[in-house]
Image (cartoon, rainbow over all chains, first blue to last red; front, side, top):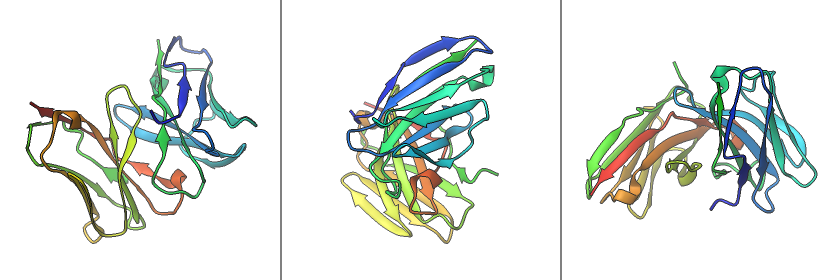
Length: 114
Length: 112
């Protein structure tokens, strides 16, 4: 158990809808990362938050947004969903934004867009 | 061309075999190299971490980095059925996790 909790584990929705994925990092970790994993693209970095502030953006679509709350949990909002957004969404955390290598991943939220 | 190339497999070996997993990359600035293991329906977990070129051994696992060839490897000795998982290579140029680039992952099955 990595200590990172993600909800929901599975989500099925329709095109055009909006969903929110939730992540609780490991106790004490200040950095939260969101990744998208699809069969053909592998793990793609979306966005990072550190202690409530956005630190880095990767390949995150404008239809997607995220935030990290004062209690350090994070939410990833996906709107105007398209079929291609179907994927596994992982949250990961680390203690420090400059700590290289060890990210602690949750078990992921599997999103299916029909 | 992707920054990090990894053969997705699948790779199937008998128990006890030596497994070799590889990644190539194009960005010569990468200097931090990781291997993550991902079991089915789980998130990836860090298996090995190396900095720059050279070898690192941890039990049955050995990670090798050849920066001159832009090639990294993970060797698993005496493979066990419990090693069946997807192995993802990852690398970074900066001492910063948000710079990390992952390979697509190689699915390994070790048959008893």
